Amino acid sequence: MSNEINAALIKERIEFALDIAKKNNVEAEVSASESIGLSASARMGDVETVEFNNDRSFSITVYKGTQKGAASTNDLHDEAIEKAIKAASSIAGFTGEDKYAGLPDKDLLAWEAKDLDLDHPWDIDSEKAIALAIECEDAARNYDAEISNSEGAAVNSHRGVVVLGNSHGFVQSYSGGRHSISCSVIAGQADAMQRDYAYTLNRISTQLNSAAEVGEEAARKAIKRLNPQAIKSQEVPILFSNEMARSLLGSLMSAINGRSIYHKASFLLDSVGEQLFPEWLNVVEQPHLKQAIGSSAFDGEGTATQDRSWIEGGKLQGYMLDSYSARQLGEKTTGNAGGTRNLELQASNMASFDDLLHEMQTGFYVTEMMGSGANTVTGDYSRGAAGYWVENGVIQHAVDEVTIAGNLRDMYKDIVAVGNDIDLRSSTRSGSVLISKMTLAGK
Image (cartoon, rainbow, N blue to C red; front, side, top):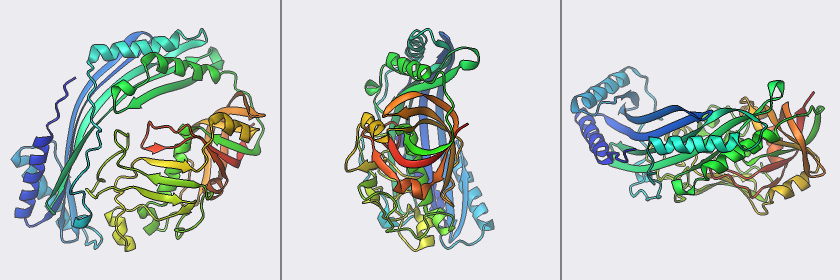
Protein backbone atom coordinates (compact mmCIF):
# COMPACT_ATOMS: atom_id res chain seq x y z
CA MET A 1 0.00 0.00 0.00
CA SER A 2 1.29 3.45 -0.89
CA ASN A 3 2.33 5.49 2.13
CA GLU A 4 2.17 8.87 0.43
CA ILE A 5 -0.25 11.54 1.62
CA ASN A 6 0.33 15.03 0.27
CA ALA A 7 -0.23 17.12 3.40
CA ALA A 8 1.78 20.01 1.98
CA LEU A 9 -0.55 20.29 -1.01
CA ILE A 10 -3.63 20.32 1.23
CA LYS A 11 -2.14 23.06 3.41
CA GLU A 12 -1.31 25.14 0.35
CA ARG A 13 -4.86 24.70 -0.97
CA ILE A 14 -6.35 25.80 2.36
CA GLU A 15 -4.16 28.90 2.36
CA PHE A 16 -5.31 29.63 -1.19
CA ALA A 17 -8.95 29.25 -0.14
CA LEU A 18 -8.50 31.60 2.81
CA ASP A 19 -6.87 34.15 0.54
CA ILE A 20 -9.81 33.97 -1.88
CA ALA A 21 -12.24 34.39 1.01
CA LYS A 22 -10.39 37.48 2.15
CA LYS A 23 -10.60 38.96 -1.36
CA ASN A 24 -14.34 38.28 -1.28
CA ASN A 25 -14.66 40.13 2.06
CA VAL A 26 -15.83 37.10 4.04
CA GLU A 27 -14.33 35.21 6.92
CA ALA A 28 -13.84 31.50 6.41
CA GLU A 29 -12.84 28.27 8.05
CA VAL A 30 -11.66 25.39 5.93
CA SER A 31 -11.30 21.75 6.91
CA ALA A 32 -9.68 19.20 4.67
CA SER A 33 -8.63 15.60 4.97
CA GLU A 34 -7.05 12.89 2.89
CA SER A 35 -6.91 9.20 3.74
CA ILE A 36 -5.51 6.06 2.19
CA GLY A 37 -6.26 2.54 3.21
CA LEU A 38 -6.31 -1.16 2.52
CA SER A 39 -8.99 -3.61 3.67
CA ALA A 40 -9.03 -7.34 3.03
CA SER A 41 -11.47 -9.96 4.25
CA ALA A 42 -11.77 -13.71 4.01
CA ARG A 43 -14.60 -16.13 4.74
CA MET A 44 -14.52 -19.91 4.91
CA GLY A 45 -10.92 -19.91 3.78
CA ASP A 46 -11.48 -17.88 0.62
CA VAL A 47 -10.83 -14.25 -0.23
CA GLU A 48 -14.05 -12.26 0.10
CA THR A 49 -13.02 -8.63 -0.52
CA VAL A 50 -9.94 -6.54 -1.17
CA GLU A 51 -10.45 -2.80 -1.17
CA PHE A 52 -8.12 0.14 -1.58
CA ASN A 53 -9.34 3.61 -0.75
CA ASN A 54 -8.00 7.09 -1.35
CA ASP A 55 -10.49 9.65 -0.08
CA ARG A 56 -10.31 13.40 0.10
CA SER A 57 -12.63 16.06 1.50
CA PHE A 58 -12.44 19.86 1.36
CA SER A 59 -15.13 21.80 3.22
CA ILE A 60 -15.52 25.56 3.41
CA THR A 61 -17.65 27.57 5.82
CA VAL A 62 -17.95 31.32 5.31
CA TYR A 63 -19.36 34.02 7.56
CA LYS A 64 -20.92 37.24 6.35
CA GLY A 65 -21.15 38.89 9.71
CA THR A 66 -23.32 36.44 11.61
CA GLN A 67 -24.72 34.78 8.50
CA LYS A 68 -23.27 31.38 7.70
CA GLY A 69 -22.95 29.32 4.52
CA ALA A 70 -21.08 26.13 3.66
CA ALA A 71 -19.96 24.24 0.57
CA SER A 72 -17.55 21.41 -0.24
CA THR A 73 -15.52 20.07 -3.14
CA ASN A 74 -13.23 17.16 -3.94
CA ASP A 75 -11.50 19.14 -6.66
CA LEU A 76 -8.53 21.16 -5.37
CA HIS A 77 -7.93 23.21 -8.52
CA ASP A 78 -8.19 27.00 -8.22
CA GLU A 79 -11.45 27.27 -10.13
CA ALA A 80 -13.21 24.62 -8.04
CA ILE A 81 -12.18 26.24 -4.76
CA GLU A 82 -13.23 29.69 -5.96
CA LYS A 83 -16.58 28.24 -7.04
CA ALA A 84 -17.10 26.60 -3.64
CA ILE A 85 -16.38 29.86 -1.80
CA LYS A 86 -18.82 31.74 -4.01
CA ALA A 87 -21.45 29.06 -3.40
CA ALA A 88 -20.94 29.22 0.37
CA SER A 89 -21.11 33.03 0.27
CA SER A 90 -24.31 32.90 -1.72
CA ILE A 91 -25.87 30.48 0.75
CA ALA A 92 -24.83 32.72 3.65
CA GLY A 93 -26.73 35.58 2.03
CA PHE A 94 -29.96 33.62 2.39
CA THR A 95 -29.51 32.47 5.98
CA GLY A 96 -30.76 34.25 9.04
CA GLU A 97 -28.63 36.28 11.43
CA ASP A 98 -27.20 34.21 14.27
CA LYS A 99 -25.24 36.18 16.83
CA TYR A 100 -23.62 33.02 18.18
CA ALA A 101 -22.12 32.00 14.83
CA GLY A 102 -18.54 32.81 13.82
CA LEU A 103 -14.95 31.72 13.96
CA PRO A 104 -13.52 30.30 17.20
CA ASP A 105 -11.72 32.73 19.50
CA LYS A 106 -8.28 33.48 18.09
CA ASP A 107 -6.46 33.22 21.41
CA LEU A 108 -7.79 29.68 22.02
CA LEU A 109 -6.49 28.15 18.79
CA ALA A 110 -3.71 25.54 18.75
CA TRP A 111 -1.05 27.77 17.23
CA GLU A 112 1.67 25.30 18.22
CA ALA A 113 0.18 21.84 17.71
CA LYS A 114 2.03 19.07 19.54
CA ASP A 115 3.35 16.03 17.69
CA LEU A 116 1.57 13.12 19.36
CA ASP A 117 3.29 10.33 17.37
CA LEU A 118 0.10 9.03 15.76
CA ASP A 119 1.32 8.06 12.30
CA HIS A 120 2.95 4.63 12.01
CA PRO A 121 2.62 3.09 8.52
CA TRP A 122 2.16 -0.67 8.28
CA ASP A 123 4.28 -2.26 5.55
CA ILE A 124 1.49 -4.47 4.25
CA ASP A 125 0.13 -5.22 0.79
CA SER A 126 -3.00 -7.02 -0.35
CA GLU A 127 -1.33 -10.46 -0.38
CA LYS A 128 -0.09 -10.09 3.20
CA ALA A 129 -3.46 -8.75 4.34
CA ILE A 130 -5.33 -11.65 2.73
CA ALA A 131 -2.93 -14.15 4.29
CA LEU A 132 -3.45 -12.64 7.75
CA ALA A 133 -7.24 -12.66 7.37
CA ILE A 134 -7.20 -16.34 6.33
CA GLU A 135 -4.81 -17.18 9.19
CA CYS A 136 -7.09 -15.44 11.66
CA GLU A 137 -10.23 -17.21 10.47
CA ASP A 138 -8.46 -20.58 10.26
CA ALA A 139 -7.36 -20.22 13.89
CA ALA A 140 -11.00 -19.68 14.87
CA ARG A 141 -12.50 -22.44 12.73
CA ASN A 142 -9.88 -24.97 13.84
CA TYR A 143 -10.10 -24.05 17.50
CA ASP A 144 -12.91 -26.46 18.34
CA ALA A 145 -15.40 -28.72 16.57
CA GLU A 146 -18.22 -26.58 17.99
CA ILE A 147 -17.26 -23.73 15.63
CA SER A 148 -19.72 -24.47 12.83
CA ASN A 149 -19.63 -21.41 10.61
CA SER A 150 -17.91 -18.10 10.09
CA GLU A 151 -18.82 -14.53 9.25
CA GLY A 152 -15.21 -13.98 8.23
CA ALA A 153 -12.05 -12.20 9.29
CA ALA A 154 -10.76 -8.83 8.17
CA VAL A 155 -7.51 -6.88 8.13
CA ASN A 156 -7.56 -3.08 7.86
CA SER A 157 -4.84 -0.46 7.60
CA HIS A 158 -5.68 3.21 7.18
CA ARG A 159 -3.73 6.44 7.42
CA GLY A 160 -4.78 10.02 6.95
CA VAL A 161 -4.09 13.70 7.47
CA VAL A 162 -6.45 16.39 8.79
CA VAL A 163 -5.79 20.07 8.07
CA LEU A 164 -7.75 23.00 9.52
CA GLY A 165 -7.44 26.68 8.72
CA ASN A 166 -9.37 29.90 9.26
CA SER A 167 -9.26 33.63 8.60
CA HIS A 168 -7.37 34.28 11.84
CA GLY A 169 -4.31 33.05 9.93
CA PHE A 170 -4.48 29.65 11.59
CA VAL A 171 -3.43 26.57 9.59
CA GLN A 172 -2.49 23.36 11.41
CA SER A 173 -2.51 19.66 10.63
CA TYR A 174 -1.95 16.22 12.11
CA SER A 175 -1.48 12.78 10.61
CA GLY A 176 -2.47 9.46 12.06
CA GLY A 177 -3.18 5.84 11.30
CA ARG A 178 -5.11 2.86 12.62
CA HIS A 179 -4.59 -0.83 11.97
CA SER A 180 -6.80 -3.74 12.97
CA ILE A 181 -7.50 -7.47 12.68
CA SER A 182 -10.97 -8.83 13.45
CA CYS A 183 -12.89 -12.09 13.29
CA SER A 184 -16.50 -13.21 13.80
CA VAL A 185 -17.54 -16.87 14.03
CA ILE A 186 -20.57 -19.00 14.89
CA ALA A 187 -20.67 -21.88 17.35
CA GLY A 188 -23.29 -24.62 17.56
CA GLN A 189 -25.81 -26.13 15.18
CA ALA A 190 -29.36 -25.46 13.95
CA ASP A 191 -31.38 -23.54 16.54
CA ALA A 192 -28.57 -23.60 19.10
CA MET A 193 -26.13 -21.29 17.30
CA GLN A 194 -24.33 -18.36 18.92
CA ARG A 195 -22.11 -15.72 17.34
CA ASP A 196 -19.27 -13.69 18.82
CA TYR A 197 -16.27 -11.72 17.65
CA ALA A 198 -12.85 -10.44 18.62
CA TYR A 199 -10.58 -7.71 17.35
CA THR A 200 -7.28 -5.98 17.94
CA LEU A 201 -6.68 -2.32 17.06
CA ASN A 202 -3.65 -0.08 17.43
CA ARG A 203 -1.86 2.80 15.77
CA ILE A 204 1.29 0.63 15.62
CA SER A 205 1.00 -2.63 13.68
CA THR A 206 3.65 -4.42 15.76
CA GLN A 207 1.51 -3.88 18.86
CA LEU A 208 -1.50 -5.71 17.42
CA ASN A 209 -2.33 -9.13 18.79
CA SER A 210 -1.45 -11.90 16.35
CA ALA A 211 -4.02 -13.04 13.80
CA ALA A 212 -4.16 -16.45 15.49
CA GLU A 213 -4.80 -14.90 18.91
CA VAL A 214 -7.70 -12.88 17.54
CA GLY A 215 -9.25 -15.91 15.85
CA GLU A 216 -8.92 -18.10 18.93
CA GLU A 217 -10.45 -15.42 21.13
CA ALA A 218 -13.45 -15.11 18.80
CA ALA A 219 -13.92 -18.90 18.93
CA ARG A 220 -13.67 -19.06 22.73
CA LYS A 221 -16.23 -16.28 23.13
CA ALA A 222 -18.69 -17.87 20.68
CA ILE A 223 -18.46 -21.28 22.36
CA LYS A 224 -18.90 -19.76 25.80
CA ARG A 225 -22.24 -18.29 24.69
CA LEU A 226 -23.74 -21.69 23.81
CA ASN A 227 -26.71 -23.09 25.78
CA PRO A 228 -28.06 -19.83 27.22
CA GLN A 229 -30.57 -20.30 30.02
CA ALA A 230 -33.60 -18.24 30.94
CA ILE A 231 -33.58 -16.21 34.13
CA LYS A 232 -36.50 -14.60 35.92
CA SER A 233 -37.10 -10.86 36.16
CA GLN A 234 -35.51 -9.39 39.27
CA GLU A 235 -33.40 -6.55 40.66
CA VAL A 236 -29.74 -7.60 40.76
CA PRO A 237 -26.21 -6.21 40.56
CA ILE A 238 -25.05 -5.63 36.98
CA LEU A 239 -21.43 -5.91 35.85
CA PHE A 240 -20.72 -4.15 32.55
CA SER A 241 -17.74 -5.52 30.60
CA ASN A 242 -15.09 -2.94 29.74
CA GLU A 243 -16.42 -2.70 26.17
CA MET A 244 -19.99 -2.16 27.35
CA ALA A 245 -18.98 0.27 30.13
CA ARG A 246 -17.85 2.76 27.49
CA SER A 247 -21.50 3.43 26.70
CA LEU A 248 -22.07 4.69 30.25
CA LEU A 249 -19.48 7.39 29.64
CA GLY A 250 -20.97 8.12 26.23
CA SER A 251 -24.35 8.77 27.82
CA LEU A 252 -22.73 11.08 30.37
CA MET A 253 -21.01 13.17 27.71
CA SER A 254 -24.18 13.36 25.61
CA ALA A 255 -26.02 14.69 28.64
CA ILE A 256 -23.41 17.38 29.37
CA ASN A 257 -22.95 18.38 25.72
CA GLY A 258 -23.42 22.11 25.43
CA ARG A 259 -26.04 21.80 22.72
CA SER A 260 -28.17 19.60 24.99
CA ILE A 261 -27.71 22.11 27.80
CA TYR A 262 -28.68 25.28 25.93
CA HIS A 263 -31.66 23.42 24.44
CA LYS A 264 -32.56 22.44 28.04
CA ALA A 265 -32.80 18.83 26.87
CA SER A 266 -30.67 17.02 29.43
CA PHE A 267 -31.26 15.29 32.74
CA LEU A 268 -28.04 16.97 33.92
CA LEU A 269 -29.21 20.54 33.35
CA ASP A 270 -28.02 22.80 36.22
CA SER A 271 -25.96 19.95 37.68
CA VAL A 272 -22.44 21.44 37.77
CA GLY A 273 -20.96 20.78 41.21
CA GLU A 274 -23.46 18.03 41.95
CA GLN A 275 -22.36 14.67 43.35
CA LEU A 276 -23.25 12.36 40.46
CA PHE A 277 -20.83 9.50 41.13
CA PRO A 278 -19.14 8.04 44.23
CA GLU A 279 -16.43 10.35 45.59
CA TRP A 280 -13.66 7.89 44.68
CA LEU A 281 -14.43 8.10 40.97
CA ASN A 282 -13.15 10.50 38.30
CA VAL A 283 -13.80 10.94 34.57
CA VAL A 284 -10.88 12.61 32.81
CA GLU A 285 -9.96 13.56 29.26
CA GLN A 286 -6.32 13.29 28.14
CA PRO A 287 -6.12 14.34 24.47
CA HIS A 288 -2.30 14.53 24.33
CA LEU A 289 -1.42 10.92 25.12
CA LYS A 290 1.18 9.81 22.61
CA GLN A 291 0.09 7.05 20.19
CA ALA A 292 -3.37 6.77 21.76
CA ILE A 293 -6.42 6.16 19.57
CA GLY A 294 -8.24 9.38 20.49
CA SER A 295 -5.33 11.82 20.69
CA SER A 296 -5.40 15.20 18.95
CA ALA A 297 -3.72 18.55 19.60
CA PHE A 298 -6.80 20.47 18.47
CA ASP A 299 -10.52 19.93 18.09
CA GLY A 300 -12.76 20.16 15.04
CA GLU A 301 -12.52 23.96 15.06
CA GLY A 302 -8.77 24.22 15.62
CA THR A 303 -9.14 25.09 19.30
CA ALA A 304 -6.33 23.69 21.44
CA THR A 305 -7.32 20.57 23.36
CA GLN A 306 -6.29 20.15 26.97
CA ASP A 307 -6.40 17.71 29.85
CA ARG A 308 -9.63 18.10 31.75
CA SER A 309 -11.55 16.52 34.63
CA TRP A 310 -15.22 16.17 33.80
CA ILE A 311 -16.00 14.29 36.99
CA GLU A 312 -13.72 14.90 39.97
CA GLY A 313 -14.38 13.29 43.31
CA GLY A 314 -17.69 12.17 41.81
CA LYS A 315 -18.82 15.75 41.12
CA LEU A 316 -19.60 17.23 37.70
CA GLN A 317 -17.06 19.95 36.89
CA GLY A 318 -18.63 21.58 33.83
CA TYR A 319 -20.24 21.17 30.43
CA MET A 320 -18.63 20.06 27.17
CA LEU A 321 -18.61 23.03 24.79
CA ASP A 322 -17.68 24.02 21.26
CA SER A 323 -17.54 27.69 20.28
CA TYR A 324 -21.21 27.93 19.32
CA SER A 325 -22.64 26.30 22.44
CA ALA A 326 -20.18 28.24 24.61
CA ARG A 327 -21.49 31.53 23.23
CA GLN A 328 -25.06 30.37 23.81
CA LEU A 329 -24.20 29.76 27.46
CA GLY A 330 -21.94 32.79 27.95
CA GLU A 331 -18.88 30.57 28.42
CA LYS A 332 -15.60 29.74 26.64
CA THR A 333 -15.22 26.66 24.48
CA THR A 334 -13.69 23.66 26.24
CA GLY A 335 -12.01 22.53 23.01
CA ASN A 336 -14.47 19.73 22.39
CA ALA A 337 -15.85 20.42 18.93
CA GLY A 338 -16.29 16.90 17.61
CA GLY A 339 -16.41 15.27 21.04
CA THR A 340 -13.94 14.05 23.63
CA ARG A 341 -10.48 12.57 23.07
CA ASN A 342 -9.18 9.79 25.31
CA LEU A 343 -11.98 10.01 27.84
CA GLU A 344 -11.28 7.65 30.73
CA LEU A 345 -13.07 6.39 33.82
CA GLN A 346 -10.67 6.31 36.75
CA ALA A 347 -11.04 5.15 40.34
CA SER A 348 -8.84 5.34 43.41
CA ASN A 349 -9.07 1.58 44.01
CA MET A 350 -9.43 -0.39 40.80
CA ALA A 351 -10.19 -4.10 41.12
CA SER A 352 -9.29 -7.15 39.05
CA PHE A 353 -12.06 -8.76 37.04
CA ASP A 354 -12.14 -11.75 39.39
CA ASP A 355 -12.49 -9.40 42.35
CA LEU A 356 -15.44 -7.70 40.63
CA LEU A 357 -17.17 -11.07 40.20
CA HIS A 358 -16.47 -11.91 43.84
CA GLU A 359 -17.89 -8.59 45.02
CA MET A 360 -20.98 -9.01 42.85
CA GLN A 361 -21.60 -12.57 44.15
CA THR A 362 -24.92 -13.06 42.34
CA GLY A 363 -25.90 -11.00 39.34
CA PHE A 364 -25.66 -10.43 35.60
CA TYR A 365 -22.46 -9.85 33.63
CA VAL A 366 -23.24 -7.86 30.44
CA THR A 367 -21.08 -8.49 27.37
CA GLU A 368 -23.41 -7.30 24.60
CA MET A 369 -26.16 -4.69 24.34
CA MET A 370 -28.67 -3.96 21.63
CA GLY A 371 -30.50 -0.78 20.76
CA SER A 372 -29.93 2.79 21.88
CA GLY A 373 -32.07 2.88 24.97
CA ALA A 374 -30.38 5.66 26.93
CA ASN A 375 -32.60 8.76 27.07
CA THR A 376 -30.32 11.65 28.01
CA VAL A 377 -33.30 14.01 28.38
CA THR A 378 -34.86 12.03 31.22
CA GLY A 379 -31.98 9.75 32.20
CA ASP A 380 -34.13 6.66 31.67
CA TYR A 381 -32.11 3.64 30.56
CA SER A 382 -33.37 0.43 28.98
CA ARG A 383 -31.39 -1.84 26.65
CA GLY A 384 -31.56 -5.36 25.35
CA ALA A 385 -28.62 -7.36 26.64
CA ALA A 386 -26.77 -10.67 26.59
CA GLY A 387 -24.06 -12.02 28.85
CA TYR A 388 -23.64 -14.44 31.73
CA TRP A 389 -25.34 -15.29 35.00
CA VAL A 390 -23.05 -15.21 38.02
CA GLU A 391 -23.54 -17.01 41.35
CA ASN A 392 -21.16 -17.05 44.31
CA GLY A 393 -18.74 -14.93 42.29
CA VAL A 394 -18.45 -17.53 39.51
CA ILE A 395 -19.85 -17.37 35.97
CA GLN A 396 -22.49 -20.12 35.66
CA HIS A 397 -24.02 -19.98 32.18
CA ALA A 398 -24.82 -17.76 29.21
CA VAL A 399 -27.91 -15.55 29.12
CA ASP A 400 -29.52 -13.80 26.14
CA GLU A 401 -32.71 -11.94 25.25
CA VAL A 402 -33.00 -9.97 28.47
CA THR A 403 -33.40 -6.26 29.18
CA ILE A 404 -31.58 -4.18 31.76
CA ALA A 405 -33.21 -0.97 32.96
CA GLY A 406 -32.72 1.89 35.37
CA ASN A 407 -32.07 5.60 35.46
CA LEU A 408 -28.63 7.00 34.70
CA ARG A 409 -28.63 9.18 37.83
CA ASP A 410 -29.20 6.11 39.99
CA MET A 411 -26.80 3.98 37.95
CA TYR A 412 -23.96 6.47 38.31
CA LYS A 413 -24.47 6.80 42.07
CA ASP A 414 -24.76 3.02 42.46
CA ILE A 415 -21.37 2.22 40.92
CA VAL A 416 -19.58 0.19 43.59
CA ALA A 417 -16.38 -0.85 41.80
CA VAL A 418 -14.37 -0.28 38.61
CA GLY A 419 -12.04 -2.82 37.05
CA ASN A 420 -8.40 -2.37 36.13
CA ASP A 421 -9.03 -4.13 32.79
CA ILE A 422 -9.07 -0.83 30.87
CA ASP A 423 -9.84 -1.26 27.16
CA LEU A 424 -7.51 1.02 25.17
CA ARG A 425 -9.00 0.27 21.73
CA SER A 426 -11.21 3.35 21.68
CA SER A 427 -11.21 7.07 22.31
CA THR A 428 -13.40 6.26 25.33
CA ARG A 429 -11.53 4.06 27.82
CA SER A 430 -12.93 2.15 30.76
CA GLY A 431 -12.50 -0.95 32.83
CA SER A 432 -15.44 -3.16 33.76
CA VAL A 433 -18.03 -1.37 35.92
CA LEU A 434 -20.10 -2.93 38.71
CA ILE A 435 -23.45 -1.32 39.58
CA SER A 436 -25.09 -2.45 42.81
CA LYS A 437 -28.62 -2.84 41.44
CA MET A 438 -30.62 -2.53 38.22
CA THR A 439 -33.81 -4.08 36.95
CA LEU A 440 -33.26 -7.22 34.90
CA ALA A 441 -36.25 -8.24 32.80
CA GLY A 442 -36.01 -11.92 31.91
CA LYS A 443 -38.55 -14.61 31.10
